[in-house]
View 1: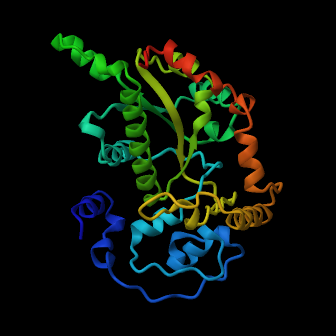
View 2 (view 1 turned 180 degrees about the vertical axis):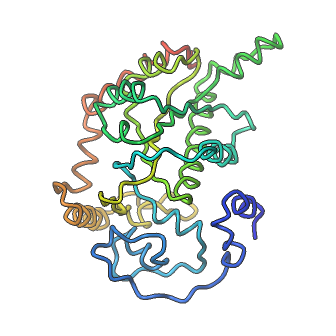
View 3 (view 1 turned 135 degrees about the vertical axis):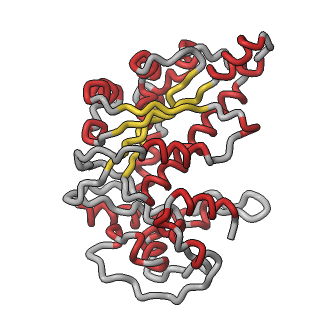
Length: 314
C-alpha cells in the first residue's frame, strides 16, 4: 500500500479499511434502486458511482476500489447547510490534509483564511452576488496565492526575490492553493462535511483583500464553503464529460466530438429534471460562459486587479 495512503488513513481513522481494500478486486454489485442516479452515495458501491458520474446504464466496473475512490466519485457541491458549528480542531485537521498536497519546489506559496464571523461572511457574499450558502455555512475558507511570505523572507535576509515578479511564480501560488484546497475538500467529505467552491470572490479581488487585510502580493483565488449538509435539500452528483473527451494517449487526439457532447447535454438535462431545476444543455451554458467579457461578472479586469494587489507580472 502506498505510504501516502497510510498517512491519509492515519489522519482519518474511518478510512482505515484502505489497508485491506487497496488494489483488491471487487465483485460487481447490482445498481442500487435509488430514486435518481444523482442521489447515489459513497455507500452504494463502485458501479453505482460510475453510473451516476457518467450517466450510463452500463458502467465499466473499476478494477480496484477503496474508500478514498468512493469519496472522490461521490463528490457533489453542497449549497445548503445546517447551522451546526464544526467540532473543535476540524479546521486544523483539514489544513494538515491541505498541507500534505504537493507544492512546487516546496515553496508552499499559499495561505488560507478561515472566516466564521457572520457579518464578514455577509460582506464577502456581496462580492459574489449574494450567494446564500456563504451565509448558511458555518465556515468560509478563502484560499490565497501567497507570495508575501517569500517576499518578507527575502527582505529579512536581504536577498533578491526578483522572480516573484514573474507570471510563472504567481502560477505556482495559484496551483499550490488549488491543490491544497482539493486535499481539504476530500478530507472534509471523508468526515461527512459538505463543500462548494466560490470562484465569484474574484469578481472584486481588491474588496476581498481589503476585507481580509491581505498584504501586497497575496491574491484571493477562491472561497470554499464548509459545513454539514442540510439533509432536507438534495444535492446530486453532477455528471461529467465522457472520458473519451478528456483522456488522450501519447498525443492530443480529438478534443471535441459532437456525439459525445450531445450525449453529455442529455446527461446534464437528466440531472436537471431529477433536481427540478430549469433545463439548459451544457453546450449552451458553456458557450454563454465564454461568450465575451460581459459573461465574466467583473473578472475581465483581473489583470488590473492583480497590478493593484502588488503583482508586477513580467
